[in-house]
Length: 375
Ligand code: PLP
Image: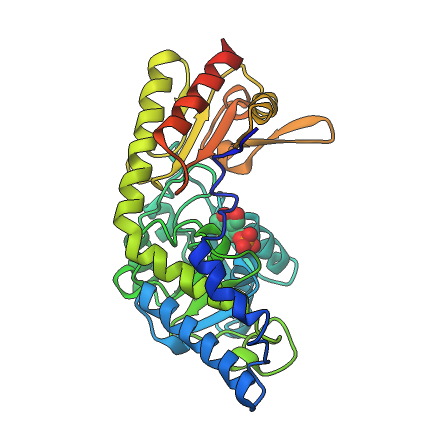
């Protein structure tokens, strides 16, 4: 049985061009970038070359990019790094209720360490309220961290407006772009972003490698002690092959953004049109316009999405549910709860995230399978 993969928000396959570029750094070019002899220098050059590609893709300077091990580490470094470095200025952070656990749990940790965090509400489409954001700002606010695009419902926040509010109050603005990079053209200056997290495995690069952009002049502390790598901000021998893979993957994604988006949009619109014409009680969660092109989050009320997923898996289909079964009871996701979905709609929520390999025939097969299972 062949596999039909519709879970690109979870991870993406590594592109062959990316893998080919990485391979020499596992074999002949295995040198440590900190070593001064030739194979060390070769690795160092490869790391810097990748840094240039990342900087070019998001419109910043090379020296503003720090490589990390993943999106979660980038988020930790951004939020804790800014919080600890700026605690003499204040102890208040603003974020939203629908952030990824990499942000939410980092904030919880900071709350246990003397910081105060405001978690903004979102409306039924997943947007924060800009007025609530303004009202939440206090003299002690040092950081606003709002994700660019949500991993479950795909909603894209009004980032330019948010960054302007932060700038007007001289507050540092971080955005978790783990789902957005590779899907949306992001220029950090155009969007007014001070810190940005990304992760290669979401845009056809390898797992275990991420990056953090930090605007020149923003104070942040290291959270991992050790050697002097990454300008003394992130200790640990660099994952050279991973960094090379991230650089190649972001370069390809950036050159291909328009085609990729229009392909995914066609598939997504086809799916939504067909399914909503067959089932009139389904609900598409998240905003229909300001949305990641490959994201479909759909609730089938009265259906157990986990059960549906298992049946789809029997047909070779990989997708994801908006609720997770833990200790025998199904827990609706914090995102679906925050947008106000009833338990019935939340437990019936299926997340389909489209990607490069998917075709219209794949989507037709998926619809067919759903129809056979649901009747
Ligand atoms: N932030 C968002 C929005 C994500 O979707 C994810 C992963 O799904 C992460 C952070 C964490 O990224 P990583 O898996 O690279 O740690």
